[in-house]
Length: 530
Image (cartoon, rainbow, N blue to C red):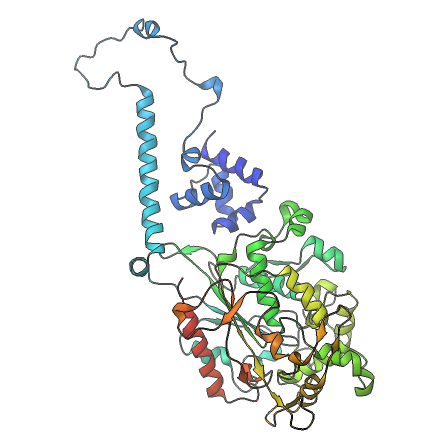
C-alpha cells in the first residue's frame, strides 16, 4: 500500500469528505484528489499535519508496504544462505553483501531526518518569541490579519444597493471602511440576513469568507422548514483564509460584530472550531466544512460592540406594554428601531436586500419579510434577541481557547433623581429615548424564568449594559491596560463607555472620535501575541 492509498483509506476511516479533509489541511479539494490518485505527492508539512490528524506516524505514511504475495522470500536458516552461489566481480566492490534490511533502515532514517529538519524549521521559529518574528521576516514578512465588520439587526453591508447611499459602518455620515483602509488596514463589511437568525447569518458569513455556496445545514433546514442551500459566492472574501503562508503562518481574520452581529461572529467562531454533530450526522459526506470543526485557528480575535449577549429586555418591554404603545408586532418594532439606528427611516424596496432566498423569497417589502421569518418559528433574529432566545443560543456557542475575545458596552442612561431608576441622557438619539426610558424602568420575569431586575435597567437604548458585557456563565476579566496581559479564550471586558446604540458605528457621533476608537482597537489587536 503506497501513500496515496493510505491517505484515501485514513480519510474514509475518519469520516471526512475530500472537501472537509482539504479544509483541515488548508489546501484545495483538487490537491487531495491528486494525492489520492497518485497524481501528486503532499509536501512534508502536510504529511506531518496528516500524521497528527490521523494519529499515525509519518514513517507509516511515507513507507510503501508490499502485499504479502509480492514480498521477497526470506531464507529460513544460515545453510540456505550459504547455498546461494554468488559469482565474484571482476573488481572488488565494498558492501556487496550488505543486507537489504540495513538499506531499508538507512532510507527510513534519512526520511525521518528530513522530516525532523523540516519540523524544526517550521515549529521552532513559530513558538519562540523574537526568533519567531525573525523567521516571519525571512519568509515574506509577518501577516496582517484583515478585519471583518458584521452589522446588526436591520443592517447591511457591501453589495447592497443601499450601501452606496448610506454606509452602516460610519452611521451614514462617513464610510468607515474607506477611512480605515486609508490608515493601512484591510477591512471588509459583508452583508448577512438583516432579520435572519444568528445561525443563518453565520452560515451566510462563512460562505462569503470562504467563497462557496451557503449551506444552512441539513438538520437545521429541515427543522425550520426552509431550503438547505442559499447563494453561491464564487470568489472568497478572504484569499487563502486558513492556509499557511510566509513561513507557516496561518491566514486568520479579526471578527467585529455590532449589536446582533456580535452573536453572529461568536457563533461562526464556535462552529469553525467545534462544528455541529447534528449536521455531520444528517449531512454525511455532503456536510459543509463549517460544521466539521477543527478550524478555530482561522480566527484571531472576536470583538462584540453593544452586543446583546444575554438578550435585550426591550423584547419584554414591547411584549408587556405593546398595546399601550400601539405595537402589534415585536419584530416589526425592533426592525423599525434598528433601521433608525442605522440612519434610515425604513428600507426602500429595490435597494434593500433581505437575503431570504432560503425561504423561497427574492423580492419582498418589509412587512412580508417579517411575516416570512416569523412563520419559521424561532428561526429569526427577534427570538435570538430575547433573553430566553439568547439563553438558548448561548448553549450552542462556546469560546475557543486560542481566540482573543473583547466586548464593549455603551450606556445612554443615568440614575434618575425622582424615580430612582435609569433615565436617558439628553444626548441620546431621539428615536431611542422612549425605549431607553422604558428599559430603564422595567422589571419582570421572562416566560423562560429569567429575572429582569434592577441590574438590567442601565442601557444604550436597545441593549442592556449588563447583557453587552459578556455572555452569562462564561469566564471574563477586565480588559488589561497592557496587551501582554490579555488572555485568549475568555472575555476581555472593556470599561463602559458613554453613548447610545449607534454611537460606536458613527451615528450621532463625531467622525474623528469614531475613527479614533477603531484605530485604538485595531492597534491593540494587531499587537497581540500570535
